[in-house]
Image (cartoon, rainbow, N blue to C red):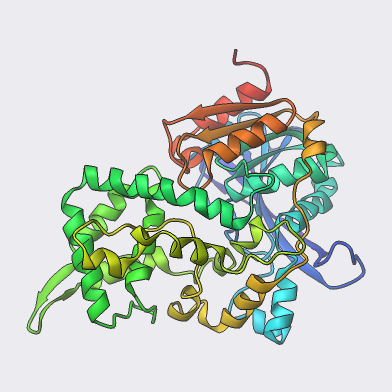
Length: 435
């Protein structure tokens, strides 16, 4: 059953599907998938080619656009767009602290979540494609983790692809989670130094906030405990186009004078909660390291925590003991996330089991990618904080026929911040409209 409705300039249609939890067991448990079709007003009756959008993450549902925002403006000129809520997210069968206990023990929860990586997502896409396209291949646009899924698509089911477009999401084909995080920390430090060069007043502000948190137990609205390490994780903002400015505005009014003296303001604490809470995307925390797991014999074992321990410059206590700037951290998940965030705390044991899990299967086949015949174009953002540029370019050299657009005009969120321009460039590349 489908439902259609309108927004300015577009016609939207809701689609609901059921797919196997484990595609290797098609007769077993099934879960729900939700996807929103978008077509330009007046083009609804036309036989337009399909473009499937895979959101970044893991663990985020497809972005909720209004009308023709961001890259949709360009896509809707000649495509019918499908915004898929990947399994476990959005209006698809949810996986969170409220629903996962239905699975039973933490061990059963971890086993359930082992089916929520890129390989299962791509098989979901292939399961629903015939019902939408009549069997015709479609174009896939993958942002960040969606690009990881698209790269797996090229390995596992290239026959389903008309073209593949990747923005900020060309993964290493071989790097371990430890290698990914070790490559990331120097980039994160550069983003910190660039932020402090732009806003030198934030050096003292960040140190003052961290010192206050070290001395006072601080709880955010909703019960999230704000520790110095949790405060440092606001650095995830520094990888987006306006993130440095957002961080600055958050820090500038952190303290308020009260009858009991200066303390962190309610406005600051609420702003921090909005940035740090995983209530809306718990799978990001649960599966973040698993997206890099490809060695069947090796657990990820909290790789980010292990790598960070080897870089004392990121230690908050050490920074406060000296006179240097406090370094914010980036896109990484640590064991303490599952003791400070109420949305994650009930899933702590499940997270530990996923971190210790072995048996992960490889996600990419370099030999098959070297024989690729699908037109592919990728936007690679110079010094992308989230996805290592060197890793991306190495992969680009492996995938036969892949054309790259390397740019420092945008940060990791270029496909959203750049309006139609990024998608327009990639479409031109795959159609040989750019020399």
